[in-house]
Image (tube, rainbow, N blue to C red; front, top):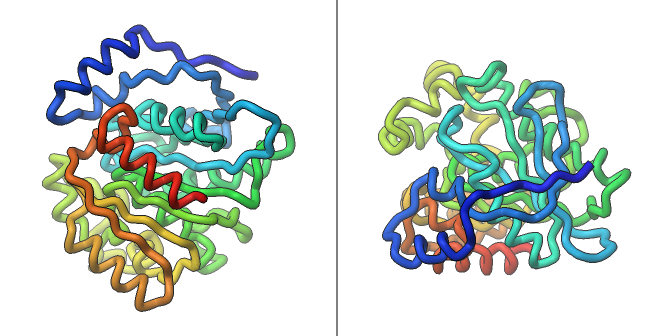
Length: 293
């Protein structure tokens, strides 16, 4: 069943807003226009386990992009509406998009391991969708923003986890062709203190159920940098949240392990990156299309 997302404000209003805004916040991005038809599907039984499938014009099958919003891994900071405009723009370029919601810290079942299991289950649910929808499971990409950038890299790393891992979420993770991390970390242990300052409260420690010294195995499995090489092309877009030194450490370690990782520095606020009708947002779209060719 298809439903249409409704927005009370017009494209013209927001075009004017973005032309004069210095920086966008999460509330601004949450109101970005996204009036295209979407199929809303539950990939699990919990209220937060749902996602939006957008399909391009035509018959398909279409390459599909898993889109993961950020929000400091914490309920109340962001929702899939924050990445709806990004998903809409990618769909205009011929990609099906699967914009996922998930349980975060503060949601019933969120945190360790539920948040990771939701990312895994939502991705693998594309196999179910492919039975009735024109999505190409041989061309699956993943892109995430902020905490969702960590999720995107982690989804690409799942296949490297032990089969008995508490967060792997199945023996046969859906293969990923490329991962794009928009201004978010690939190393949770290195992000604990910095993310607390950026988000205004501790966020990584509640997600993981402890500090790196207390639950080192959890951090090892949750941090994509510890699973390198991922054997998946990766793009790191660094702007306001992902620190340049952390991005470079990840890139160097990935390159030494044999992975292809492109590091792109953009002079931008954090939320302009997922607003396609801003110059930084358009630069991100161009990077995504390049990565998914």
